Every structure is written in C-alpha cells, then in structure tokens.
Image (cartoon, rainbow, N blue to C red; front, side, top):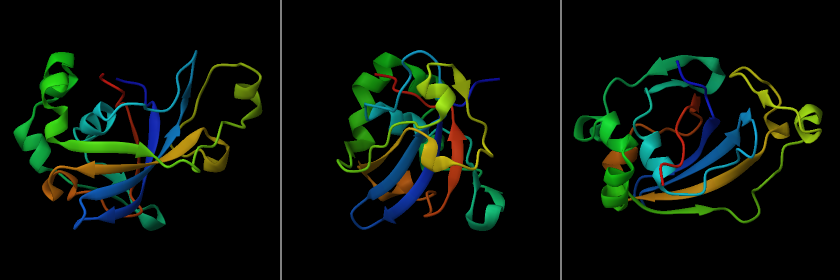
Length: 158
C-alpha cells in the first residue's frame, strides 16, 4: 500500500489544443515534500488507477486508457524510460504564475509532519497550484473530465 502524495482536480480540458488544467494539492507534509516540478509527474499520472470522484461526490471508474495499454507501470517508474520517452506524451508543463498558494494548516506551518486524507474538506488550506499541461496527443488525456478529483501516489520521476 502506498501513501498518497497529492490530490488532483481537473479544472479544464481542451481536447482541440490537447491541454488539461490540473489543480494539484500537496497532501503529504513530511520533510521538504512539495508540489511537482517536472513533466514526468504528469506522465506518471497517466498510469493512475482510473477511479475518480466526480461532481456531486459520485465515484466512477475508467478501466482502460490508451496510455495504460501502451506503457506498463514498471516502464513509467523507470528513470531511464522516463528520460527517453516522457516527451512523447507531455509537450510541456507550466505552473500558472498567479495560482500558487502555500499551506495554511496551523500544524504544518508549525513544522509538524502531516498527511491529509481524501475527505479533507478544506482544500483552500493545502499547498496548491494550477498546472497547464499540453499532451502530444488528445488520446493520452481523453479520460480526464472537468471536475474529476482523486488522490495519487504519482511523483516527479525525473
């Protein structure tokens, strides 16, 4: 069993431009752990078990995706594979300049380690930022829908 590191919220999907706007929340406050800094995070995010919480709190699953049919989890977790292939899936990742918010949970601000569970209601208190991610092909992002929310163990592979 793995520890979730981030909460992901799909803010906007533009299939024509192959862009997804993700709001990423840090939910793992241990040491210097912070928000993702490399496009490899969003490539690895494509391997997530595709179970989401949609609008209204209803959960649903997407059982297959083109990425999971093309790439194994072992490949995506390999630094060598990611170095060679990540650009084949993500063209660019850009943090929206005005979107960063630091954590304001008093225990974390005081330096205590903390893990935030999936039903934590105060997202506005979590360290967060919006990322604009451009994919190389719309098929890699076709399962993302505006309003989807889930927590993930994905991380910066590179």
